Amino acid sequence: MNKYIFLLTFAILLWLIPCRADGIGTLMQVGKSMDEIQRDYDKETATYNSVKEAVGKGEIKKGLKQDAVLKYGEPVAVVTETANKRQIWVYRPGTTDLLNKPKIRLFFDGSGALDQITVLE
Image (tube, rainbow, N blue to C red; front, side, top):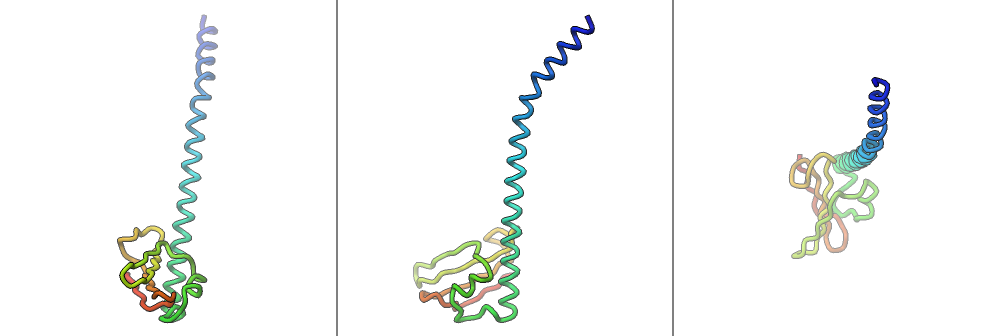
């Protein structure tokens, strides 16, 4: 009798294992997504640090064209002012949202030349 109870319990456990494996796949996908998010944060932070260093050294200065600034990395956000046709490029560390500090804003005029730099720390 104990032998049959053991076999029945074992059979039930084997039947339940595939159900739990579905959850493992979902957890693996979430883990991969978190890794991608962290890589994006790291890339944004590295770009911010590169732009901050270049501004500090005077490599990024007024009059510089957009293409020359892109060698330091892509901005996190680009905003276009409708009134005076300027573009604002925003750089920030990966863990900072767009409304909080620190961030660097580069203002480009209609011809694509840098005309203002704002560094918020």
